[in-house]
Image (tube, rainbow, N blue to C red; front, side, top):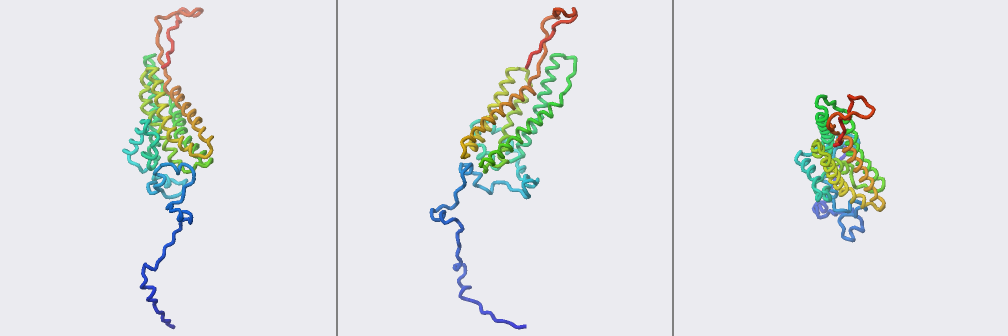
Length: 295
C-alpha cells in the first residue's frame, strides 16, 4: 500500500469566507432596473390582494390534488374564525375587501358547515311552517312530513354552493384568469349562503309579505357579496366580454332565491268563508266552505 503526501494549500484556507463570491440569479433586466422581484403576469395577481404575495400564510398539505391530505389544512380553522367570517358576510361594506381582510387563508370547513346547516334549516323550517298551516286549516288531521324536500334541499344547496363555484373557476382558468384558486371560489359561495339560515327560520312566521321581504333581503345581501368578490376577478381578464359572466351568475342567483321561496316557503292556510254555501248544480250538503290563501 502506497501513501501519497498531499500538501495543504494554506493560502486558500486562510482566505476564509472573504474568498467566496455570490451570484444573483435574477434576470439581467431586473438587476439593471433595480427590481428585486420579477413582474407578475397580468391578472388578479397584480391587484392588492396581500395574501397572494404572502405564500407562507397559505396552507399546504401533503399529497396530490386528488388526495384527502391535500385538503386537510383547509379544514384546520377555529370556530371563532368561522363565526366571524359568517356574520361578516351580512355587512355590505365589508364585501369588497372580504378576501384580503377576512379570508386569509381560505378554508373549506366553514363553507361546508354553512351549506349543511342551510340544508337542514330549509327542511325543518319548511316542515314546521307547513305543519302550522295544516293545523290552522284542519286541526284534526295530522301533518305528513315530505322528506322529498330534504333531498331537494341537498341537491340545490350543494349544487349552487359547491358545483357552481368549481365550474366558474374552471371557466376562468380556461380564459386565462388563473390566480384565483378553487378554494377561494368555494369559500366565497359557501359563506355567502349564511344569510339564508336566519331567513329560513324567520319564514316560519305566517305573514306572506314578510316572507317575500325576507327572501328579497337575503337575495340582495348574498348577491352583493358574491358580486363584490367575483366581479373584480372577471374584470382582471384581458377579454372585456368576460365581465358579462356576472349577468349569468346574477340570473342563477335569482333563480335560486325564487326556488327557495316557491319550494320551501309557499305553504298556505285554508280558511272558511261564512257558512256552507251550496254550489249551483251540486248536492245540498256540499258547499264552498274553504278557499286557499297563499302565504
